Image (cartoon, rainbow over the protein chains, first blue to last red):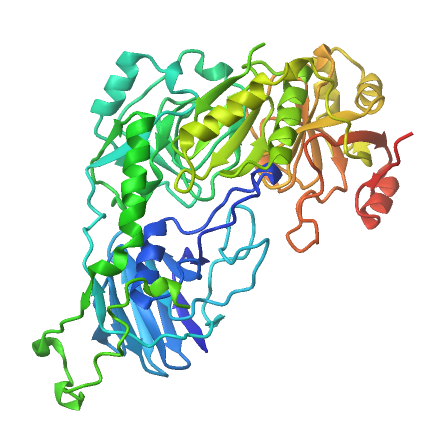
Length: 339
Length: 238
């Protein structure tokens, strides 16, 4: 099974959960910017969340399915169609062989195309994700062919009912090694600030506008480890959030670290949207992460049949209107564990 | 010098041996990191060092976070890590390097800031092995040290727009060797044939923290010969 890339805008990349374990070699984990979207895609398809997907960063892609396949659309909602017929977002669809798929971003968010069987891109250093900053792989171009792994499941026509995370107004962060270097007044002002994203964001990090801040002895900090989610205060006093492909060490003071479970909401905030950064202590942050981890394990509870409005189906009479909807595994308690 | 464990978000901690770079703090971080790895504690997902600290990533979904931190604190309290001799360098590398010329145009400038002639500067950078204090920032990129106090020279205020792969640069009593072409504020005083990161190689990252490097001054022909031979070779401990 394979898909051919007909056209691709900038920053369309194959992504999985990244490559953990290389920090001592100077390589950050990388992987999908919105990991929750990969988990949702896996829940829709009933397959492991470790399979590789296609990430579209505020851009577009046009693909031809060389064979019939299943496609789940998750992350920032985009305009998607199959041979011109609109495809519902946060849903899994059956794509006939030879179809042309078009997906175009509506804003700067990250959209994900997950395929039944996953993208079988070459494994490099233990992962399939492209790491642009480290030069591992490259963005997809027109005429690329992406191999798709064997798909053991058949279910389609399902939708995932999940809260919209693309319009968050508050992102939570917790304590990091240098939080105590910021005095109480600065931390209070930081939390009262209405931030927006600067246009200069990418997979390495995102600059924020909204205020200037400083740590005590800010310029005298020795380089030490940095991790995705770190909020560093750069030389001109602005906040910069490190993301999936960040460097592994840094010498700027850091206010704290955004909760892993809030990173998906953060990366999906549209340009121009105002939001706040709210501090929670470590114990509270741990509870929040654990509750979210449990919710993610039971995402399949949020699967519902995809109801299409007959009025929007252009070739309604071409459909077999009875039967053929269920393939019997929609109500499996843990679909991801069967493969 | 007391080590401290800092929260680093929910799923990591940073164990820091202070906020000043010293050989003692650096070797303590390397020794503690090696010991944590050897202990093989369930729930420790990853261990890495930077100059004077150890970062430990934790699996807080499967394991109790407070319990993991208590185990790390117990290891920290087991001995005075800063009083221990550093771990024996795993490997000693000999690295041919062209100092100065058009290949590394800032030798004279950096030497002058250090109060040395270019010849004295080359001597100072080649007369003894230097330890890889940490690998970081970019894949496979080493920070070496520690140089004599004369080399406590500041970074440039204006960035050099790009130094090539294998560039040897100096500032603040350290050397950085570049694994990828990069803009930098460090002064470019030498050029090696090192390929520090090559994802296609069986061992993608050439150096490890704790390795030692002895630079050997060569001319352009010597550099090309080194390039053909892979840029460096491990020399047996005497």
